[in-house]
Length: 287
Image (tube, rainbow, N blue to C red; front, top):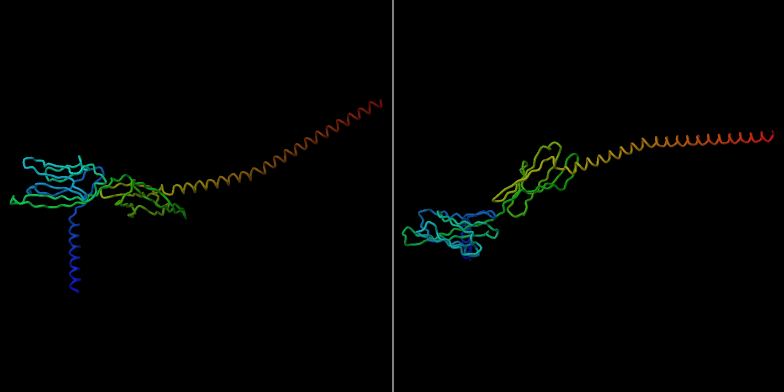
């Protein structure tokens, strides 16, 4: 019974080792969307190539046939998706795919058939590739969010992102040396001269953008200044109101008193004039 389990264990171990060996033989090739990628075969001049059959995980791709009387091999594209996009090097038979598309990504295999040293026998060498297609990264964008202001310290969250976000994009921040797309900053007046730079990169390209420390929390600072200016303006208006109101009231009171005195004087004059008229009337009657 123990021997039976031992045989099963050895069989599993052998299977795992074979799988690991196959994976190590696969060469990863990185390509840029819209550009050209090359699959290196590493063929020496001494090797006599007869033909090379290229295929991906779904179908055949191309057949390359060496012609002794011609310097360039004959290339037959066997799948319509690769028409006018396949080229083969005359020197080393490397396959090139131009105008890369995202759907081109995947596993490719080349069966290389060549003559042996005896020139009568043939041998086949297989090369495998894992094609990864990536977009060329544009300039990332840095945005601010979650801003708070406490004790002259501005707490702000910076987020770095690129257009058409995809996998295998790594972000880093300098000069802090932080990794990831999100950076938490505690901004103080003492570090206003710093510049924070976000670098986005994938296996084929990288790009960066920067933001000055002076730009951070500018909205909050401006809001505080505006708020303070509003308070000062309100206090100034209140002060002027308190200062001017008594003067206005005193002026109105004086005007009212002056008007009252003027009316009183006019009234007295009217009475005196009336009295004089009466006296003149009585005097005329007595005469």
